[in-house]
Length: 200
Figure (cartoon, rainbow, N blue to C red):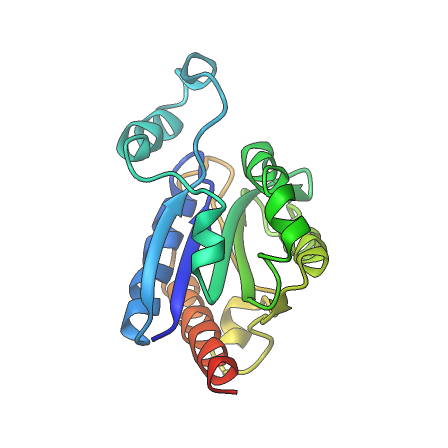
């Protein structure tokens, strides 16, 4: 059985919704799944005036937080982070930056990796966020498995690099059917590929 870790950071909850969808799809594909959030590094007082951010923080703060062991354990890892100026968010980067000792041992190598993201606008840095993530995963020695255009549904969501969601200017747009289908496809593709590699 493929072991899949879904590791994500979410501020206002879109990433949480997407991560749960991927975790469910991974389980449907036959994987053993760990769903882990990257712990919030911002003081809750700094986002107290943002109801969505506060609600997501309260809903997830007591859930298991991601550690390096969640990558070591896994055959495949799907990472998620919102876009911040064209790159993953600072709390996610802090988590990645904590993995140096595991990287030095080669413990992050030879695993299947993919990613998802969200931003307020269609051209808000989604592609560069995923590419910047993948540059890091190249340093890991990871096997990057993007969705590409491997299914017709990818022409609906339009992102061959991973999966991305547009939250809208008010940051309230729900994850739509095309994005959910793309999340399902990504999870199945990653689990299937990891399974093929483990068979040899």
